[in-house]
Length: 391
Image (cartoon, rainbow, N blue to C red; front, top):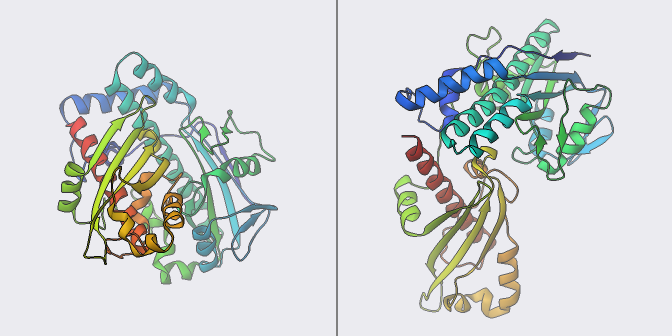
């Protein structure tokens, strides 16, 4: 059993990681106004930030056919369940890290004072601190596990792919069941944490260290940016944006088919028009509208609403085979399909979906394929806009 509480951990965010989170390409060197803002955000946090970390071993956990039971509480994350199963994990460590409420409060004040640049750089630095804290927590757990002839797996958190963020309040309640955290942390009904620059995570622990060498997907080091770590088993692979769709096509669609409208809450409304043809009936043209409501960028553009429906005045969809069979049922199915609802937009990059390129909407696979095209186009457009704003 282990327990770790650090009320004032040292913070040393790697410049490359901060630059990555700011949205610049790999290897970018800040200069001019951007460098000034980055240095200011780092200095402000060093003076005013109040980070903390807490971690403890779970008293018990077991894997069901489709769920994980931790100290009697049930959680559903197929990816975490499979990772623990493959590693033959015998233990689980629950962790919480927080950059403190000060950075969030100061960033909000900068925004209200009409200083959006300072708001953005400080907001992103707070996110970088959270990433650094969870990385350092993992490193300290690796140190502990190495001495016990065990190994720690990569952390996984509610809100990650295949773990509904709605389970976060239950996870927080479990974590704090026997320990009062250094400062207040709450989970809203939506699953969002307060302070928002916080993260809850689970780390699997295994005695079968040889499995980490054989099964490369279990090696946490490839996702860990901590430099010069003595326990490193594999090199760090910096994250890069890789789309399933050709970038040239994404650029054309972003320019010709997509419209983005900023929202008062910092989010975005997106409208994408898809033009295709039916597969039969002489290939009649059809058009569908994809409507999205995304949360703020600093929250990862979470998908809050999504809907697909025929474009106004479109008649082509009425010539599809499935529409002719039962039009109302078909349109209801299309409207009800919301593949990444509630998840960050970035999840589309790792979404395993159908590759069906049929122009019609008769089959679920072809509809899923089109949702992938739409979401990647929105992701591409927002990433380009963020880069332009900072250049």
